[in-house]
Image (cartoon, one colour):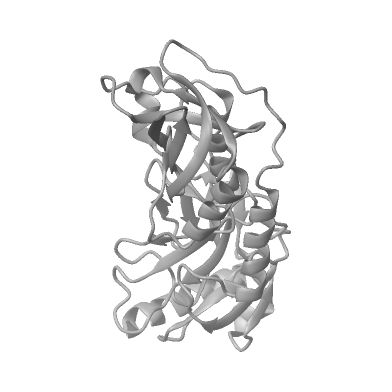
Length: 318
């Protein structure tokens, strides 16, 4: 570690003297500040942001560096095949395909090997088209400890060097506000005229029970159907599980609904079906995906009757 640090110190001094580093802030050059303001204008709350960076963890750096991304919007955003690029070390870290960050949520990119300069580094988040989505200011980290550079509050343009919070809010109060805003927006999508597509079951009934965010029991006459929502994926271990469940309860539990069975997911004549559920004028599948509290089931994109619908394609079906 000392050899690496010494080498980087020499390189930084040379670059600053040659005027190559450019907008390197005084705090990065002197490394005696605990706060940096991003002069690039990033942190405006539009799209995915680099929210926290661990460039110099305690002990060996190899395999222990990481970058936290944050979605400050009220909808889930696909970040598959985005990349994080370093400015000093000149390396690229590619994010796996099919990754989605839900509304107000975080995603930690674990770095393989050792990519970051310990003295100073500037990171850029680049989309698959090569466009820069966000970038950090020049951030120094010569301390071999558990402190990280992080936006404070989450998503802002001010960076502070404080105790690490990987995968969680840097400022819990601000994070809660994002979650509440996302939850409040559920059910505000443009009203739709409920109708069944295809040739499978079209059921008018009432939701009498909810066993999961995307699993309902619907009573229609003398029959009761267990309905799993098409194209959605829910995990009880997700921190947003309760928010998603609240949306389903608020829109559908005890309400009259129209159930459109997925033509391509018909399994005989059983009472367990996969479908789109309309609660009044709201497409529940769409509302849950739009909220960012529920993920897209990508596997169903290849088989679902509804994969070509605008709301499904917007969330990742192609």
